[in-house]
Image (tube, rainbow over the protein chains, first blue to last red):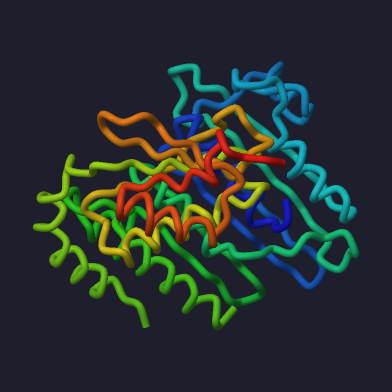
Length: 183
Length: 123
C-alpha cells in the first residue's frame, strides 16, 4: 500500500463486514510515532481465527485463498520498527462488549515508513460506501485534534437524508480539511 | 467554518429531492474495494465516479457503490456497470482519466468504452 490511509480504509472495511454498528478510527501522533487504532463492535473472532489472521494464506473470502489486508498492515508497521497487535472478543450473544481492536505503531522517522496520505479521502470513502454504519474518527497530534462522529451528523440529518448523499459527503470532506489546516 | 447548521440546511434542501430519487437509478456503478482494489488505486477511481457523476448531472440516473473482491485481482481497479435489461460491463485497470470517458460515453450516452473492458484488455 502506498499510504497508511489506504491500510486504514482496507482494515476498516473488515469491521463493517463484521457487522460493526460503530467503528472508531484513532490516529495519535507523537514526535516519533504514529499509532493507528481501529476499534469495532462487530462479531469478533475466536482465538483460533485470531491466530491465523496475520497469515497471508488465511482468508474468509471464497474468491481466492489469499488474504493480504492484515498482513500488509502488520508489515507496514513492523518495517518501521513499530508493532502490530490485534485483539478480539467474539459475540456470544450474551455480552455487550464484543468486537475487534487492531493497533499499529509506526516510527515516523524510519526510512521505510509509508506516508500517512489522504485520511480525509479514506473517511469520506468509508461513509459513502457504508452510510448505515457509524464511524468515530479522531486524529490527535499534541494538543490539536481532528474529530468527526457520524452519530452527530446522523442526528442532524434524521432518517430522510442519507450520509452518502453527495452534498453531505462534500460537507464532511470540507469539515475535515478545515480541521486539518490547524493540525 | 463548516458548521452543523450548514449540514441542517443541506438536509432541508435535500429532503424533497431524496424522496423523488429513491429507486429511480437506472445504472449502477460498482467499484471493487477489497485489499486488491484499494492497493491498485480504487479509492481515487471511486471518488472520480462520485464527483464525475454529480458534475455530469447524472446523479438521478446513476448510483455509485462499493463492493468487495470480485475475484480478478490482477485487473484491479475493477469497475462493473449494471443496467436493467443489459449485460453487465466490466472495466479493468481503471484510472481517474478512464473514468472521465466512461462517464461521458457510457453513462451519459449509452456507448460502452470497449477498449477499457476486460474483453478487450491486452497486457
